[in-house]
Length: 268
Image 1 (spheres, rainbow, N blue to C red):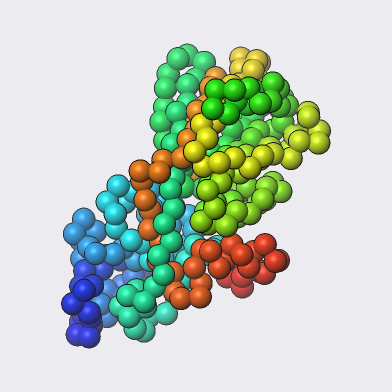
Image 2: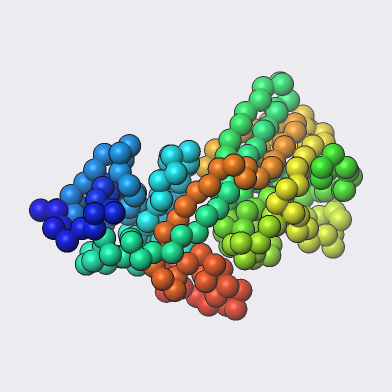
C-alpha cells in the first residue's frame, strides 16, 4: 500500500522503467510501497533504468517542468542515483536539483528536407560511408574552419560533455559553465585541431562539403537524420530540464570527480 508518511508537498510519483526485467521488478515493488500516479499529473517522475532511459524520460517530459529522479537499474548510471527502496519520498524531497538546457538542431538534407530535434547530450555530424566527411564550421555566421576532414564533429552540452564527447577526447565541462564543447571525431585535417570551447550563446553552422560523394548523418541524442547538407545548432535557454540527485551526488560533483579520474563503480 502507499507510504502513509508521504509528505503533503510531494504526493504524486509516477514510476517508469526501461522494461528490462530488473527495472520492471523494481517498478512493481516501488508501486506497492508508494503507489503510482499517472505521469501527466505526477509531481515527480522516478525513472528506473540506465542513462538511456534517463535521456528518453527527459525528452518525453521536456516541456512539462517535471523533475526527474532516476535510480540505476541499468548498465550505465552516470545520470542516476543508487537504487534503494527505503525512504524514497524523503530522498526525493532532500535531493539537489540540476538544471540543464538542451541543444536545438535544424538539419537540411541534400533534397531540401528540413528536420528539427532537441539534444540533451550532444549533436553529432558523422560520416555515413568509408570516406571521411568534409565539413565547414561557422560560428555566429563567421567561418572559423574552412574544411575539417574527419569522421565527424560534435557539439556537447556541459551535461553531455562526459558522454560521447569524453570518449573522443573532448573536454569535461562543469555543469554550470556557460560553455559548449565543439569536438572533432578522428580528425585527419587539420591534424592538430582538437576542437574549441564556445560560449553557450553561440550559433553553430556545419556545412557538409561534397555531400553527394561523402554522405553525412546528423544525430541529436537518439534522433538520426541522413544525407545532410547543413546543420545549425544553438542552445535552447528557454527550456529547463530538472534532474534530481541525492545530496553529495549531484551532476556538478560527478563531473568534477570524473575530471580527476574517479571511476564510478556503477559504470564498471
